[in-house]
Amino acid sequence: MKEKSEFVKGVVRERWKTPVMHNDQLWLLYTLQVTTKIHFFFQLNDKIKEIHVMTIGNGTPYRVTDESLGYHCIGRYFRTKKPFISKIKKCSSWKLWNTSFILDMETGNALSGYAKKRDKNYFEYLISSEDEYIEFITPIPPEWELRKNIKIEKLINEYLKKSL
Picture 1 (cartoon, one colour):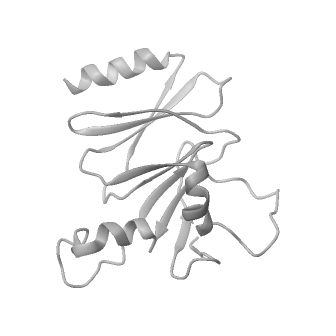
Picture 2: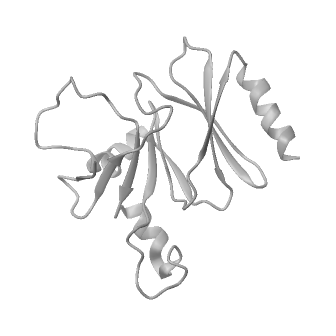
């Protein structure tokens, strides 16, 4: 269900169903950019030996913002005038419309294929981890893979070898 931001006019948000959607602690371990893909390695907490790998295409505009800097520019999309209700499950993955990131990318109508009229269907994906905000815009949803009982070094080497 889409919700309007209470503090930023025009911004709309919607929960995005992902394997890391609900969590107590989500950590971005590594980002690996290879020839055709960008891989993000997430861990839900340091006790569970599971790594979620999200993959997007290499031509996808993305940015990773530190939590302390992103709190003011990205966190404002989620501030509410109502008090926080602890019964509502925390969500760390979202779809957002009309954000500053989309508007920056849309300059010159790049997202709309240089059409004169802006395509308002474009949205950004956002993942909020413990220390970073990861934003990206892609018409193709990212791929997710769950890997269990593997060390991050070995997993990164696997992804590097696949790209060669």
